[in-house]
Length: 393
Ligand code: CAA
Image (tube, rainbow, N blue to C red; front, side, top):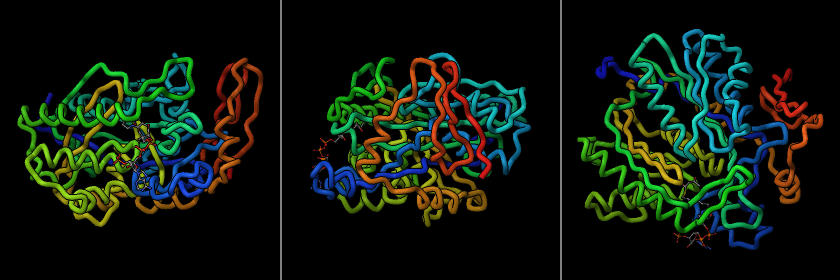
């Protein structure tokens, strides 16, 4: 197995839902000052799934442009990371595999560790490619972040899926071999199997995130990872985009700098443009931050960027990726912006109806109304089975 072989992200896209709730509209209901949302947590809007959208349709939507562009023949593994799983046994990626029309010679598996799972999937994908550089791996991160109504977490909901095609000699970014890890058994955010929404200790989760950043960064440095001054930018997991500001402030401070809100804002701004309009997308969030940075005006040819992945509970990783000289020719910037701009804005009462919507749990046949604008939809439930279809229009 060669460690010199350049391996990493060959292509990257994301998809989000057809509906959106703005934080201005949420503020009209909660009575909060909108600037708490816009500046205090750094959010403008959050994607809300239509009744016929779920983690499968989002993941297929994100991955379809990659399969359209590169074909599916060399894909040997599909890894789907999520913390909003739809089945205790069957991997959601198997539905995606069929919707994408992939051949049968593919291994499909689901990964879970809160928001961190996609980073484990990315590292596994890189390791698999090093064993056989002719294969490509489809890494999907798909999540719907749903909190209880009128809870502090409600303003940090969101939904999206990111798709990455991982391979040798990647066109977008190589993933560097050195990474820093951190694990701690802590109850900051979790979702028992019987609950549709997580239990969360908000303040504790912020501290746990920053503590995990310290731990992963120190591990990265102890393994001779690149020093901070060699990194052109750092993308952070963004449960809300202000968290990236807090994290970057912490990392600068840890490295002996005297950060100001202005220097932090300048450094972090290119990574937050998508997440401030999408909200938390759990496993996908870090990769939406990376997509935003790549799609921004920041010149990144040959530059190394840091990626900080955090999953409550908790596992964290600090890794680096080196952006390839001709990366701009592979970007999906226009499609990303279109996905955000074409969402339908919800009023608070329509959002409430969607929030309380539940698929039947007794197996009775149920057909979902056609709401999505996407290529794929959850058509309904039949005998406890989820029925997916490709839309025609
Ligand atoms: N103008 C500007 N700022 C204002 C303001 C105003 N009018 N009013 C309040 N603010 C500021 C506050 O000062 C605060 O800023 P600081 O954090 O810098 O002090 C910020 O807005 C938020 O205000 P509160 O702390 O009062 O907000 P809250 O009690 O409503 O809760 C939260 C915020 C804890 C993040 C909550 O939304 C939550 O629990 N979210 C879910 C958990 C979460 O996202 N945790 C993140 C780490 S865990 C993780 O990353 C995994 C994951 O994805 C879940």
